[in-house]
Length: 195
Image (cartoon, rainbow, N blue to C red):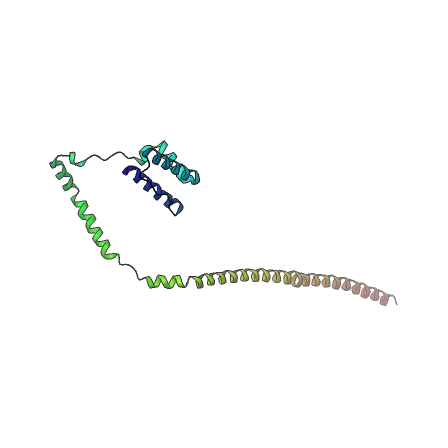
């Protein structure tokens, strides 16, 4: 009966781990063992149906029973006293080294002052606000860069290129006028020669 009570207790622990609260199941020691075992099986089946992780663990147990029931370690008392002494002496330096390392860690592992962490946690809201403000500023800078690029492009297209086209047009007109002026001067000279 103690084994069944331990199984019921384990099932309540599993339910607590999965749900966060244990069921209100109160085991009755007056019930026969068979009905208590059936109730346990139903509870486990219900838990497996509701939670896939529990079902997966049960499936793993069926496929690989050695995972949950490891083979027992050999009893060290079966060794002769001389063999035990030799084993202890062989590992003495490792034990001494581990003890020294643990002592050193214990002396070095002073708990840091929590006030700095508390201040950092208190500043977390301001830090988040500053990060959001920085993100907005970066977006604004990006938008301003884009607008500046558009203004420079417009100035280049409207100012520089159109001015260059105007100069080219004026140069062509000037050449045309120069040709007309030369023709008239040549015609006047011819007229002056014949008169």
